[in-house]
Image (cartoon, rainbow, N blue to C red; front, side, top):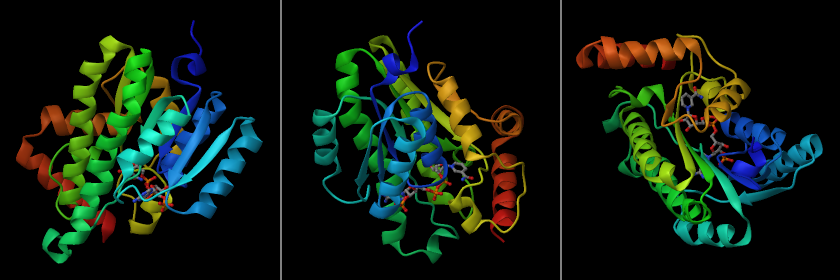
Length: 261
Ligand SMILES: NC(=O)c1ccc[n+]([C@@H]2O[C@H](COP(=O)([O-])OP(=O)(O)OC[C@H]3O[C@@H](n4cnc5c(N)ncnc54)[C@H](OP(=O)(O)O)[C@@H]3O)[C@@H](O)[C@H]2O)c1
């Protein structure tokens, strides 16, 4: 049996690794013996997180502070890929403008496109290319149950999450024959700083980030789509297979309004 490190190592890169689900992914990659590049905007937090992983798991880490929405991402990605053999990429960072679309300045909505669409596409292409050449590796796109249908007050975010899932499905088919595993993780409510900051009250069972990360990494290789958690799987089944689209849109909208108050 090939070990996780042989299959997806030696380095993993996690985009959005300073806290929340991204840090849980970075931690679980390190626990599985991968060296980890941590990407997010806050340099000091990132340095502290990187040291924490080295201390806890004895792996090498690299803090790479950058804004995924800034220009020049492709060049940065190519430079890091040339320097480190990256065998696993986790595209986790996201921006979720909340509230009705017309109450947001356009710039803010376009920022969600930059962080949630342009950046994952760019990183998947530039960091995935060497994996495709090597004939091994893995790519995880963190999507959301919210991306299954249009969701009022989260319309832009939900649409970007649909993009992530569909991108992963296409890449799964393209890269599987070349030895690279691709997986979309359709996360449901997860107790992260981002969730806590924007949620008035829980309306569904909430998962812990470490459980989502662990189950998703276990599912890598069984793509193209993984839904962590039994209640999330039931919700996805109902939203995709049982309810008429219009009813699903109304239900998602109602629960999002209740979540955010
Ligand atoms: N939490 C949930 O309930 C839930 C449910 C479904 C899906 N998801 C998905 O899970 C993923 C993680 O969510 P989360 O709740 O853990 O988010 P979070 O707590 O808000 O953390 C987001 C991470 O991304 C980084 N980040 C944000 N914007 C960035 C940018 N422009 N450039 C670089 N890094 C950036 C943040 O670090 P810095 O601030 O330091 O940049 C942070 O490390 C997202 O893809 C989200 O759509 C979450």
